[in-house]
Image (tube, rainbow, N blue to C red; front, side, top):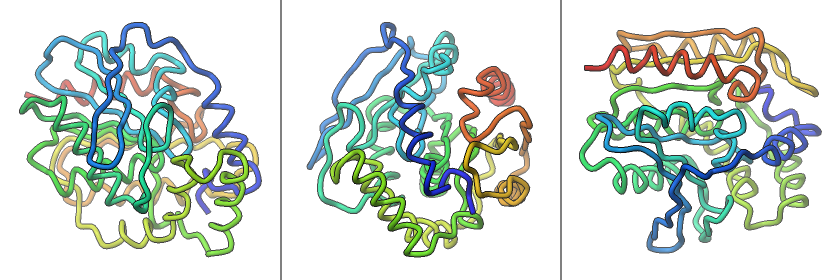
Amino acid sequence: MYKLFAFLTVLVILISCKKDKSPEVSFKESMLQLSTHNLATYSIGSNSKYLVVFESGLGNDHTIWQTKRVAEDIGAKMDVVVYDRAGYGKSTIDNTPRDISRLRIELKSVVDKYANGRKVILVGHSLGGMVIRDFAIKNPGMVAALLFVDPSHENVLRLTQEAEDILFNSINNSNGPNFGGTKETRQLIEDAQYMATLPNLPNVPVVVLTGMKSDPGSTGNTQDLYNAHELLKSGVTDFTHISDTNSGHFIMIDNPGLIIEKFNLLISKLP
């Protein structure tokens, strides 16, 4: 089973990563007003050809991309937006189910605010990988390229109701019912079922990074995860898949240079 959801240790991993935050002095904070709640966004840049938007994983706010300055390094030459999904950081939350479809709709709201007609390069970690995958499939004309950082995949995210309940209760007890991660956890079984119905990615340059080092408490088989990630190449002409034996699930912390390197590879392929 996917290593992020090693149920007795995952909460510790997520919270420990959330606490290691770097300053946001160069990013402009803004609130995006939706009809029922607000999303906190953080942007940097000066009108580059493409917009880069980062999507975090379950349990993490936008600062996961700043822990080792991945967002800052990319923002030195590209327009970048990081943001907190509903219920994370300064973002508020409503009562709608926090499933992949809803997260994709709210990601589109962020893109619509900042893209100004430009195509986007989406970077997604873990559950965020599902979100950007759904976005790309539903909005192919808006996407220039995709970078998946150890993304969740339905072939390995196969939770029983009991397992989801254990994870939900752990996060709820630690963070409360209105925490974004609490509400997102309650949709994991439905999310996996939903993702299995989606067609192939659009034919844009795609890079997938798979962390092959087991995290503490991991119950997953990293080879199974690698094999699932390989399936993302269906219908994609320009597909690069990297197995990183030096990283666990949080590649942006274990090996941030790899993300920068492969991001630069992506943009070198774009017109």
